[in-house]
Amino acid sequence: MKEKVFFTSESVTEGHPDKICDKIADSILDEFLKQDKNAHVACEVTATTGLVMVMGEVTAEAYVDIQGVVRNVVNEIGYNRGKIGFDAENLAVLVSLDEQSKDIAMGVKEDEGAGDQGMMFGFASNETDEYMPAPIMFAHRLTRRLTECRKQGLVDYLRPDGKAQVTVEYQDGKVARIDSIVLSTQHSEMVDVEELRTFVKKEVIQKVIPSHLLDEHTTCFINPTGRFVIGGPKGDSGLTGRKIIVDTYVGYARHGGGAFSGKDPSKVDRSAAYMARYIAKNLVAAGYADKLEIGLSYAIGVSEPTSIMVTDYGTAKTTTEKIIQAIRTFFPLTPKGMIQYLDLRRPIYSKTTNYGHFGKINEGLPWEELDKVEELKEFLHR
Image (tube, rainbow, N blue to C red; front, side, top):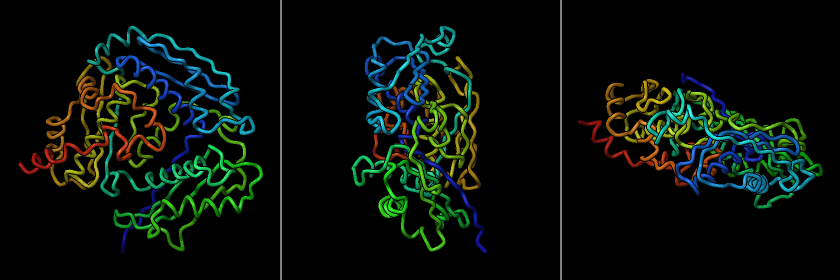
């Protein structure tokens, strides 16, 4: 008898209040990096009805129009009408940015040391083309498609806020079917809920979910409460870093706890998590295991990681010692080494904000490249 396991993952649209804040923070970071590649940025954002507040620490040889960035981001997301409840033109924008602490700056001088202590994890699985868990990739596809439908104007009643949840049934460790889909989208007051549900099922779910994974027992809940008019920061306050699980592996693998958005790459919360993903993805693609989680830990001001942890879920084709030896041989693990190797001091971060920081193919994100596979294969068979 086949062993059945159910796993659920969630994604949110770019109009979700927390994601608005993440997008603003990453866009501000990009603007500083455009002018000063060595900028040190730790930017936090919060949003509520009619108000965005930007706070944090920045040390940079640059001037950024923070108010302009905030309004541009909010407008691009689609909050451009007062009736939606959050309007780019009429927002109050409060800014409180100070210089980076000199105590922290001492530890990260020239990116030699880690900006803080912490644990970062990277994960990869060969169950999808993206080397990501299937549930989160399906959830991201749904929210991305929902946003595409709104921005392409396929209908006029969709609004920016929304979220999706997908439950995948695994049989003997393999993706067998989708058991349930939950999809909620903000909408105008005028639309009939059944019209909305019909549209979402046809133009969102059926467009991005493989038909062979849907069957007569798959349950779809579309706007299950029947009404979602009030959304975005009017419906719920937003805050950077509150969707870190959605940003990564949605509980399928561990998370060290540090958020990404608004942080320059001297913060190992970001750079080490990206490097750990890069390592895991290349090792899985090279055949070291079907599924790998790589854990790195750091001490503030210290360059080398204090530990490397490997979890193979019983799928490894070699020893843990061999995997760690490969990691130390082929991948730089100091903050400076990771930043230089992945070329992280570039304004690439605003495109990471939505639909996951991992699993994006052909979007120019260096930690998603599979450029170490052949070297790793050769090393595996020595």
